[in-house]
Structures are given as structure tokens and as C-alpha cells.
Amino acid sequence: MLSEQLTEGFRDRELAEKLTGRIREAATGPLRIMEVCGTHTMAIFRHGIRSLLPGEVELISGPGCPVCVTSGGDIDQIIDLASVPGVILATFGDLVRVPGSKGKNLAEVRAAGARVEIVYSPADALKIAESTDRLVVFPAIGFETTIPVIAATVLEARQKKLGNFMFLVSHKVVPPALDALLADPELAIDGLLCPGHVSAIIGAQAYQPIAEQFHIPCVIAGFEPIDILSAIYRLVCQVREGRAEVENTYGRVVTTNGNARARKMIEAVFEPCDADWRGLGTIPGSGLALRDEFRAHDAGKYFALNPISVPEPKGCRCGEILTGKVKPPQCPLFNTRCTPTSPVGPCMVSSEGTCAAYSKYGLS
Amino acid sequence: MCLAIPMRVNEIHCNQEDPLSFPVAVVDENGLRKEVRLDIVDRWPNIGDYLIVHAGFAIHTLDPAEAATNLKLLREMADNVIGTAD
Image (cartoon, rainbow over all chains, first blue to last red; front, side):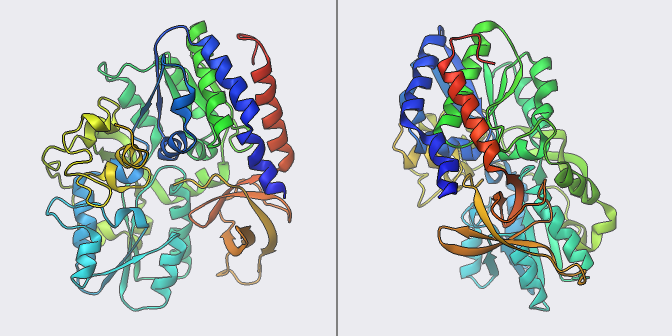
């Protein structure tokens, strides 16, 4: 079957061994590579990439999990909204077990009577709204891959005049967060493994200013072992040669300019705003808010919500883990008070979270 | 979570007379028939093309020839000596 050919070639053992050999030859000194996509974090573990790399090459996970970087205040607002009488909260499944600052998560408020529905797509949330008179709220969390999906659903809601379908928007865009990360003198990284599907939307050129300003190699990768190993090899080569360029090893999906149609839709529905990131704080221009013409679908405006800030869970080091400053085993709660079945911080909850990955794959 | 597996387009449904119907492709996901929205896809797919799908929406149409070229380039890169791999 062709779909297998489309993936099997990118899992070829012989090619993987060849690339691993190339990386070993090229890595002449210690170097730190950060991946900024939660799906890469999981793929690196699942394929055992770390075990293939020479000791010189260290992989660090960055702020690539949308649920994990959502601020505690935003999480609290989502949980509070779920408890408003008459509201159905329709959400991606990853959010359901993230604890709020008052100790409850969505699963628990649902058990206490709130209506929380897990959906695979915002289009499914829209279908719920079509079938009820109750107010359906969708917490719109995600990066550039998810944002056009939400934009398309907002447009559909308007077209269908669905007055009972609203979004609580907490979108984040990747390039300003990379700027903020790289400007931090405490974070010493030598190369960025850039996300696959965010890049399918924003295009390879989006990393050009970052590569130039911070003189850091940026290589875009897909999610198969050959994709990731090729990208690591290119990063190692660039570091060795003193270059800082944007390269793309995921050419079958990512182009220089990205998906113009999706970006146009984002532009039509959203406008830039500041956003509060867990671990990174407020980053100017790193969020997207619904344009005023879509206020009928803006739950934040409807409920007159203002940003709130809440303290991080006591002892939880998610903030430092998200910025690559510490690794999960360095957190006193990791695999003790904070486990996948009873998570304290968001990095342990989400299937893409760094702590969840370390715990699942037994790394300590 | 990004789904990395491309899905084959088996049917396309597009009712241009009804403005409230949205175009979908029917894809095969592990033997399951699944509808995928085409609102934001970069290029309109043909039957037999593959789609990269995120949260029920196609974000990219994948031409199998592009995938073959991609793999060929990565193979060549692995076969080349350091520094001449571009």
C-alpha cells in the first residue's frame, strides 16, 4: 500500500544506521539541540533516537506542548466556565486532566455535574452546538497548526449564525516564543529542531530572522526516525561549519512559504495580541485574539473575562522544564507526587508533555 | 498532537449549491472511513492523493512523488561526505 511506502522509507533501519554514523563523525564537541514541538518530543522517545546519538549530542525539549504552555490563569478560566450553568464545554481531550489552581480539573467538575464533552475536532463541537440550545464553549488552545482549524470553524459558526457557539481563545504562535527563549542568556542551545506541521503553515522562511538574529541553525523535521536523524545531522554539520541557516528535511510537507490559504484564514479571523506563557511569562505579539467582528463567538468577551494570574503548583518546575533549564528528573515532584495517573503540573498531563514522555519511557 | 501518517483520499464531496455545506474528502484511516474537511488545505487534492490531517482538517496535500524526492534527497545526504550534503 502506498501510504506505507510514504512512511516505511522514512523508517529504514539501514539508512538510520548510516545517518547515525554520519552524526558520530560530524559531532566533534558537545552540542545542545532543542526541539520545540511536543510531537517531536514524543517521536524522539518512541523511536529511541537518544540511544542512537553520540554522548556529545544532547536533546532538550522546549515549549512545544500547547496545553503545557497555557497559563494557570487561562486553565482556571476554562475550568470555571465549565461550571457555569447552561454551558457545555467541548474540548480536546488533553485539557481534561490539567489541574486548576483550586485543585480541580475538568474531569472532576464534570463528575460534580458540569457538562464537559471531549471532541476530536472543533467541527464536532460545532455539531454539538447545532443540536442544542445550550451555550457550547470550545477552549481554543494551540499553535499555528491548530489555529487555522479554529479559524475555519469560527467562519462556519458565523455563516450558520450559531449564536450558541463560542470560543475561549488562548492561541499561541511559535516564532515570538523562540525569540524570547533565545534571548535568554541562561539558555545555551546550539541548534533548533523546528516543528513539522507548524512549519507546514508558516513556511520555512519564518525561521530566517531567528537564524540570522541569534546565529542559530534551524532545521525543520518530520516525525519519522529518518526525518529526525537527518535534521540532527544537518544541525550538527551547521554547528561544525559555523553556519546558521534554515534547512528543511521535511520537504514533502513543508515549503518555503507554507500554507498561504490557511494563513489567510487565520488573518481574517484573528489579530495579534500579547500572550501569557507558562514558564516564559508574557510575550508581546505571541497570541491571537478574535477580531471584533467575531465577538458574537468570543466567550472571553461574552463573559467579560480578564487575564488572571495564579501561582504555579507548589514545588512544580514545569516552567523551567518548558524552557529547557531543567529536566524532569530534577523536579522534586517527578514520579513521586506528580505521576501520569495523578499529575500536578501540565507537563505530566498532556500526551505531548516532557514529563509525561520521561515518565512513560522510564527515563530518570 | 500532530498526526504524521498521510491518509489516502478515496472520495471528495463538494456541494457548491449549498453554501452551508463544507467540502470534505473521505479518507481511509486504519481501515476506517473518515471525513476530513478541506477548508484550509494548501492544494485541492485529487482522488489517490494523500492528506496530512490535523483535528479533522487537512492541512497539506501530499503528492507521492514529492515524498519519493524527499526520501531520495535524504538518502543522498546520508551517502555524501560531510560538508557537501546540500
